[in-house]
Length: 473
Ligand code: BGP
Image 1: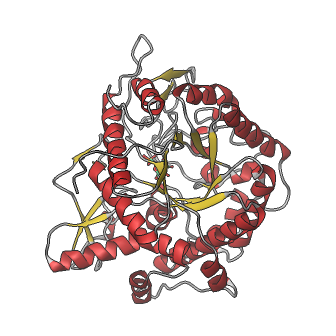
Image 2 (image 1 turned 180 degrees about the horizontal axis):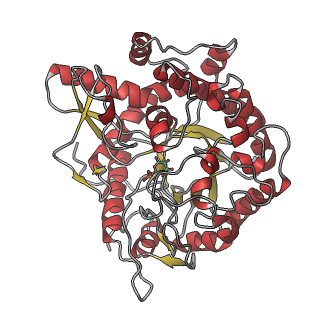
C-alpha cells in the first residue's frame, strides 16, 4: 500500500526513550537494596560489572533534565524489585520506595509521563535461591511486588508494563544472562516453559490487580516482537514461518490477550514432553486478565526456512536478534536484502511497519514501542562531541515506518527507543552504546561519568518539537 500522503502523529503521542534499572542505576547494594540475579550472575568475559553502571541512581536529576531538554513526553524505566523489596517478599525498603518516588516526581516536574516496567531481567537474589520463576509461588511473589508498586506510585503513574521481553528470556535467557535454570534440569525445554508459564500467570495476576486497584491506569505486556519472514515461497518455508511466529511471538501475546496457549506452540511442547503444569486457578486468571495495550520492543525482523532437524544446538542461539533455529520447526537464515549493524543485527525498518500491522491485525489493541535502536561503538571527540549519523539514519527510517503504520490505520501510543542514555548492554558491555546521551566511562575505567549530548540528541529534540514532522538532519 503506497499512501499519497501520510497521516500525522497523534498530538498526545508519547515521544521518549527507555532504560532498565540494572543497566543504568548502579548503587547495586546501596541504601538497603538487596542483590539481584544481575549482581550474582557470572558476567560475560570482558564486560563491565553493574555496581556503578552509569550511576543514574545518583545522577537522575541531571539525566531527567537532559531528557526534558530533548522534549521527552515519556520516560520508560524499570523498577528494581530488590531495591524496593530487598528479599523479594516481605520487608519494604523505605529508601528504595523513596528513590522511585523522587524519580517519578522529577519526571512529572517536566511533564514527562513515567512508563514503568515492573520486571526487567533482575529477579531478587533471595528469590533466585527459592527457585526463581521455577517456583510455582513466583506468580504470588510478583503479585505482591505489584501491589507495593501500585500502592506507592499508582497515584501518579498511568502506564505499566509487566515483564520485559519474556519471550527472549524463554528463548535465549540462559545464553545471554537474563534467566537461570537449575543445574539439575533434565528436560531443559520443559523447565524453561514451566518458568514461562509462571511468568504468564504472574503477568495475568498483575494485570488483574492493576485494574482492581487503579481503574484509570493502563497495563500491558512488553515482549520483543520480530516478525518472521519465509525465506522463499516454498510451501515448506511458509510452514516454518508460521512455526517461528508462533514460537517466537504469538505464544506470549495470545495468552496475554486471549488467555489461551497458541495451538502450534502447544503441539511443539507436547512433542518435547514439555507442556507446563497448571496450578489450581491458573486457567481462570489467565482467561480473565486483559491488557489495555501492547508494548513491544523491535530491533529487526527474522527470516526462516524449513528445517530438516539437522541444525546443531551450538548454532541454535547467538543472541536475542541473531541466529535462532528450532530444529524440526524452522531454521534461521540471513536475509540477503538487509544490511547489518556493527554488532551483526540486521536492520529492517520496513519490517517494523509489517510487525506493527501484524500486531494490530491480530490483537486490535493500541501499540506502544518500548525499544528500538542501534548499538554502536560511539566515539567521544576531543572537543566533547559524539557524531552518530548512523543512529540518526536508523531512527529516522524507523520513525517513517511508524507514520506509514499510522496511515495504515494502526493505533500507536508512543515511541520509546533504546536508550535514553548510554548504559551497560545485556551481554556486550558499555562498548555497545545506544543512547542519545553519551556517558564518559569505559568497560573497566569509570573515568568521569560525565554526560555529553550526541548529535542524535539535537536531532531527536527537533523531531519531538515538530511531533515527528521534521526528520531531517
Ligand atoms: C533488549 C533488552 C534490553 C537491551 C536491548 C539491547 O533485549 O530488553 O535490556 O539491552 O535489548 O540489547 P543488547 O544490550 O544485548 O544489545
